[in-house]
Image 1 (tube, rainbow, N blue to C red):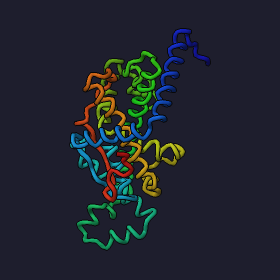
Image 2 (tube, rainbow, N blue to C red):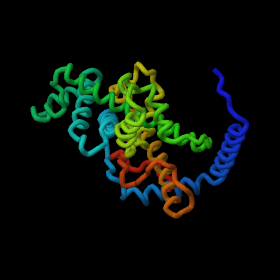
Image 3 (tube, rainbow, N blue to C red):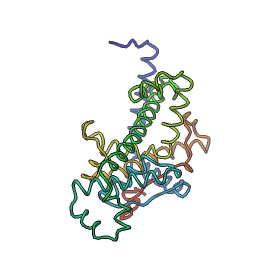
Image 4 (cartoon, rainbow, N blue to C red):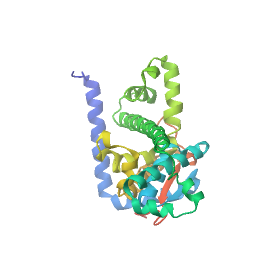
Length: 283
């Protein structure tokens, strides 16, 4: 079905595209200077973040990354640890005999902490629950990026409209039957607000790992089997966050109006690799 676009909307979209082309041309002509200033602002605001965690390389780091995405809030610490340990347990039992033997050689207390003797049924239940939480992050991310694009396109759509539209692909039938006001408030509370601290990390995971796999292959343990995406995801997420901090800094200096969405550096939860933190900073 073709969608009718009025002449005024066409002109508005063409103007937006022209502005974007000019902005990109300006960036290419001043790339080194702009990249350095962007990363400088990241370093300036980073001490204000709610938390910056240093994570491991390899499969363990990938599990830490996904566990934080699924359960980013402090009140979810116990659920995050269970999801992390269950991912590592499932991964080493199925794919990494060397790591499994290393864990079996540890004292019983450490073995129990890594859940390597926990029944598969219970491991799968924890993985299933954590995977559903990752789906909520993707739901939030798709709404967030769609809204930002609508602003660039001058589409005149509110975030609530975009969130409602994007969520139809994710919601249960029961959720769709709620009255619209209650449904939207529930979506903002359970999907958007809990994702605000980690939107940049969701992008890193999505762009550098998830989109390269078919839907039926998108199990959390797959991210551990090939963890080569981890460093790229952290760099990508940092650069998205740095760009948002530029907008925030301009707003603080009254240089432009902010998007309607709340952005506060003090909410941010960020990750870096312990082996080489802040890799590929350009300043």
